[in-house]
Length: 130
Image 1 (cartoon, rainbow, N blue to C red):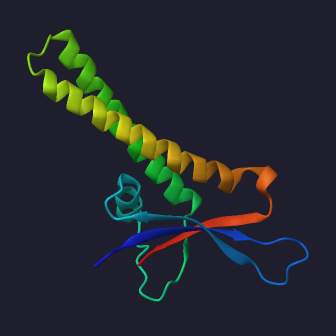
Image 2 (cartoon, rainbow, N blue to C red):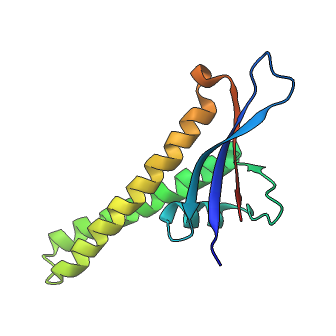
């Protein structure tokens, strides 16, 4: 069974009677982005019902990611200070840190679009997992 996180922008221009949803991205369940959003809320929908990623959810995701990034960085720094003999563990943790930062940057990008006055026609970021 395939499962995807589908991300939409809700767009409403002045001359439009009803808003439309524009598919921005479709992300497979193997992605760290999928897992992060999945864990943040109930976005599953067999009917394709789009649910808004709220300000609270964005902040919750970003705060959680920043905490994980800080912990990974602390681990790496501590391992370097004590001259840990397990180099592979440090390399793995650095790769994990890079993955976390990439997810954070993606979520931050969506959050910035959500909050940026330049994108006033975008009325929200929505998603569902099918």
